[in-house]
Image 1 (cartoon, rainbow, N blue to C red):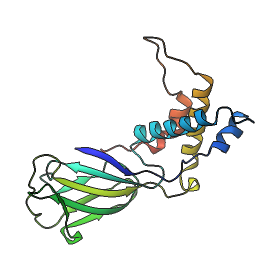
Image 2 (cartoon, rainbow, N blue to C red):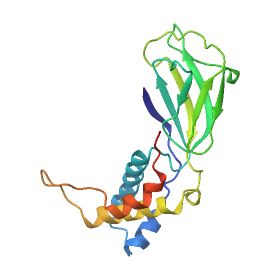
Image 3 (cartoon, rainbow, N blue to C red):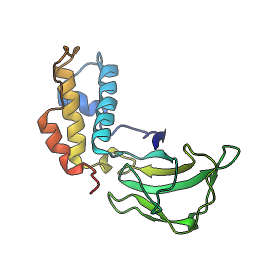
Image 4 (cartoon, rainbow, N blue to C red):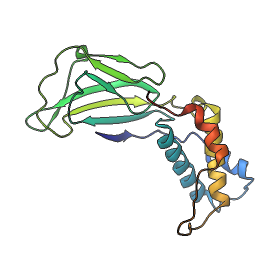
Length: 189
């Protein structure tokens, strides 16, 4: 299984102006650094939560269709399925008709199930591709407020604790940030 980001979000869920206000910075000397910290904080929290915060297009590549025909999408919230495709003998992905599967995109579910026999997959590696849109929406106001706050707090933490980490030193996300994001952790039971 491989998960590839195809189209990134158009903006970040927290703006540079928000961070500068939060940190009480009134000059432009560190704008580039702060912008990269915003992106890094978002990516770290998205990864930890198995979520996309703002609308992104992802491709999930599978070597085979699971025996029960159910594909669980690893990110949430899933907005929509763009397409499902199967690789042919020429190593070209061919989109299959959506009548071959049903979807359940309820919050935090993100799955599709085949209801018809799929055409043969011509490759043993990444022969099945599911492209899907994930995220809370397109605007920063679409994400839950605690996630935006967690990004601000993580950027502030990194800004205040710069420098290389000594060998053996534990440099973790502060517990207060982990508690902010805990309700949003995607887990499968």
